[in-house]
Image 1 (cartoon, rainbow, N blue to C red):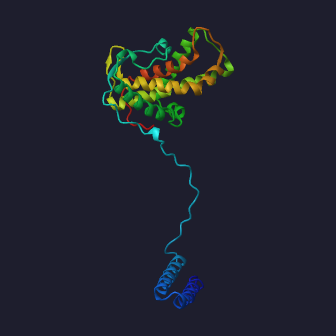
Image 2: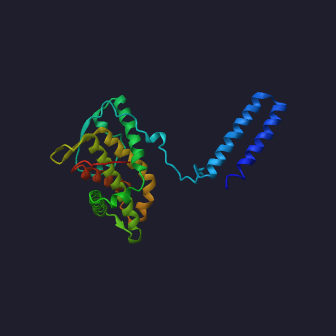
Image 3: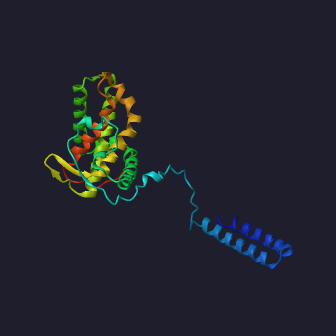
Amino acid sequence: MSRLPRRPIVLAATLVLSVIALLRYGVPVTILVLALGVTTAVLVGRHQAGKFTIRKKGPRGPIWKPKVHHQELPAPADDPVIAFGEPVVELFASRTPPLAHLGLSATVRSQLDGFALGRTRRVIEAPDLLNHAAADAETWPVVETAVQKTMALARSRGIEVRPEGQPRLMQALALSAVQGVLLAEWRQLEDGATVWDGATARIRASDAFSIQHITEEMERRQLPELFAGIARRPPDFEVRLLLPYALATAFYLRLHGKPPEAFAA
């Protein structure tokens, strides 16, 4: 009984419109009106009978789509293997281009730099890095060790910490350390387990470019967090150096051990 009131109305309207179409527009338009009307009547009947439903579009949440710079350039044709020892903070004091002492050609350097920029964007914009690292039993000890080494370095250079701002300082260092871990895992996934020459790891030249790009980008964001936790700093030490030191230390520490089984940035 539920389909009777609506289907006859559709059919009646179709009949009236078809007559009007025949008188004013001719046979072809009349046929089209009849076809549409009969089809509509059939669909109305099936809908009322519960044989199909009309889905209503609900509100859709924001969908993240990678920007152009998230899509890495192809791996460089020449990404030389280089030695990477335990970091010392003096390595980051100058802002000279990475691996300037190797005499890389302009073409190779350009390819390495472009590849590293794409990787840098993916590392620094990876969501919830700290939360994921804190929940990972393998990652978090590396982060903690890197932060402790960085804080020990800061104190040895005469930096005094402001207690009320120390959590912000520690969080900034932890974020840098997590980014170093992520970069090291990327290297392990591409090359397998790290090859060591004593205390020196074998990495790729593009990693050195990535480390510099990440720290340069994060300086702009994290310096206020660093200074929030510093009560006094010596005139002969740059506070910004704590960020690349934490990142490189975590990168170095994570190169030990097995490559991760899964990875997403």
